[in-house]
Image 1 (cartoon, rainbow, N blue to C red):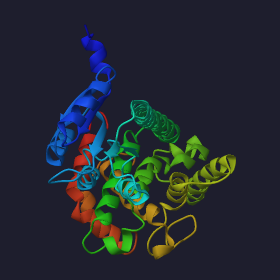
Image 2: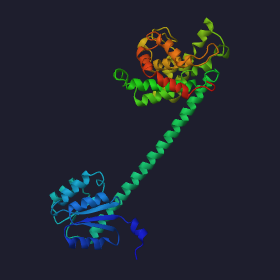
Image 3: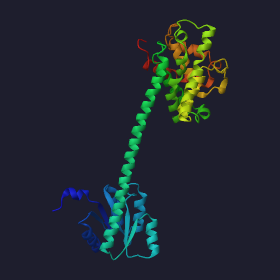
Image 4: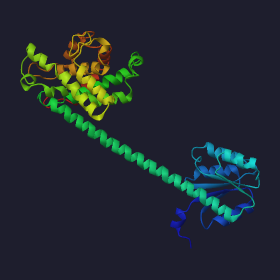
Amino acid sequence: MNNPLNQALRPTILIVDDTPDNIMLLSRLLKDRYNTKVANNGSTALQIAAATPSLDLILLDVMMPGLDGYETCRQLKANPVTAEIPVIFLTAKNQVEDEAMGLSLGAVDYIAKPISPPILFARVATQLNLRAARRALQDHNQNLEKLVQERTAQLYLMQEAIIVAMASMAETRDQETGNHIRRTQNYVRALARHLQNHPRLSAKYGAELTDEAIDALYRSAPLHDIGKVGIPDRILLKPGNLDREEFEIMKMHAVYGRDTIMLVERHIGGSNSFLMFAREIAHSHQEKWDGSGYPQNLQGEQIPLSARLMAVADVYDALISKRVYKPAFTHEQALDVMRKGRGSHFDPDVLDAFFEIEPEFARIAIAFADEGD
């Protein structure tokens, strides 16, 4: 008595032939080693193949009424559901051109009639072993791809944690900045996405603001003030306005930030989009559109786009946040101040994009509000 479990584990073969004697012969030869299904015409074979996910091999007669074996094979290979099932032709047509025809349609082998059992067993076993090997390789590749995705996700999270920790080293020295780095990175991403899909501006910025670039911008934005670690506490934490000498020292945080990122680039022997954006933002987000910013007095599009995005994000957040030298502005008050900086402090395109999505900035500010605000 056959064990049902062993039968379930057996490969399944579909026998397609219009001659009952051939079907009986093949079924008798194969039944002790394999599960078998039968069809006496091409149309039935197509239906069975499409409805049998576990089908491992098709033995297909060539000379049949209606759909012949060649056309049946052609349709099997054209259907994504059945395209991967190996087909072995069984036929009395044993000329070289007949074999070439079958192989050109996607068949894996060609067995001439009358059937020789040893040849049948050997050819069937070979193709089933190859199919099992392909499946094992596909499973291995899928598992490997899944593992790579999981490890990549873990690495991404670890990198993000390190980035936030590094940024916090600078930000936490100023006790009033709170969730500033979280808000600004979300502002920058919102602005970049809007420019990427803008009906008028996407042609200008879309090529630069790819999905990958926006992701890198989002991850690098928290490092915009990393250079503050080099500023003395007496200046960074001063409760009032800075004098001229103190302000010159404060402006050096842009240079310190750039130099810190460059040290990382030198250490790894190169750069990437994340480090490039981090360097640009740290060095240039205090530049102004009219050239009156620092540290290089860059003007207009001399300022990297990443830094122009951060300039809008950083100033908006500074305005709506409480500082020792000022109360927090309302969202509407911040909009009024920023509107006056169009074309002087801010890139007009970026500022216009900001005003088109300013409610989203307000939502981000609420979502990442500092404790007590």
